Length: 481
Image (cartoon, rainbow, N blue to C red; front, side, top):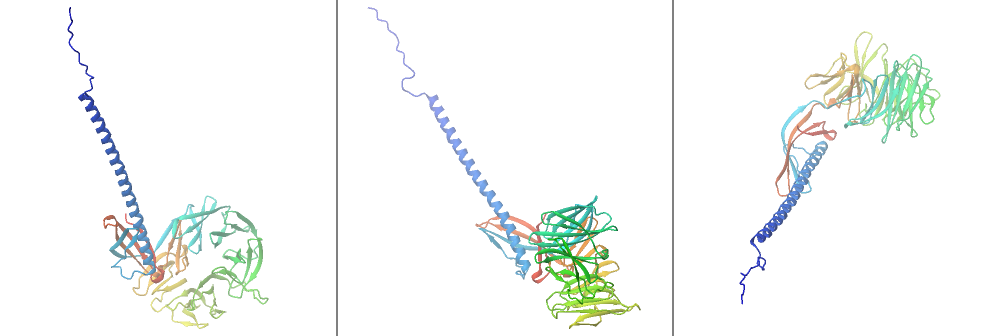
């Protein structure tokens, strides 16, 4: 019997795991582990970056809030010693300040370029200005906010103004602005009313007097926007914008019907109101000219000055036969109404209103200069016109600083603090705010913002400018470039 002997063949899959499979398994596990770790690290990094970004953004916001709080404290006079600036905590971040430089800076000045070619007129309106400019046959009306020049609002475009002289008045009620524009040409006079919604009312005016140098002003009568028009005499026309009607109004001699202050209307409806058509008012002033902290109303004519004394309740007038009134306002520290006259002989004469009557005065003691037009005095400085230039003169130094040409300038009170100067030249409106306050202070400051653990998060340099004094300080601030 032949038995075939076959060698035994052992299967490679007999239950023992091959080394290559183990290696693959370990490698795959390592890849998964590494991927998990990478993912975890990535996610952690994202959270760290996100947290860092949030902390950085918060530091910027904290810093800006701290600067704003510091500006508020400076404006209120809460910071008496500039060597020790307060710190401000916002959430868990603290911003501190250190002054690195102090220097004097000229009085505040802001400028705005109109979209039109030429600025024709500006109407002060609380802390805003209605700016009227002309360009290619279009009269453009814009509302400018002094505290934020970027917030200018276009009100309307008017057509057909060429060849006309323009007078304007405006009213502000809450956020509603009314503008009245009077056009006077050789052919006719017309009135355009611009309402808050942008709608227009245009009508011809039948005016029985010359409006070439007329005085117009706006106010509310029983909540109705109204306009009074006069040629400076004691006779005028009152326009009611609700029913679009005209009524005749009058005032005492040496005055003219006018809206003043918060819309109060000055006129006189008595039957014995004498019409003075020869004496014309050229300027109307509203200010405290008696030192009793109440506003008085002053009317200026070429040969007469009248004051409605709010404290005494009476109208007083002053004139010098053969005299020409050349300057009016305040000329010394008491803030009383002063007037400079030139007599036929060429002699100068100053008069002052005090204790209910006019009397002779020596005039400005330290600044006896040939002042003209509107004058104002405050803090040992004088504002007025000399040789066709608007000047700020200092009693302390004798320095005369030219602000602007008289012909292009308007003295008014825009912010309710003191006399401001508006200069209209070319296509630019330039506002000199309270020049009688004198120079301001420019502060260079370094800010340091720390986190809750005391770590430094942010350092910056700031420019702060402080204008005025007492409770009337104004502080402007910006990040230094």
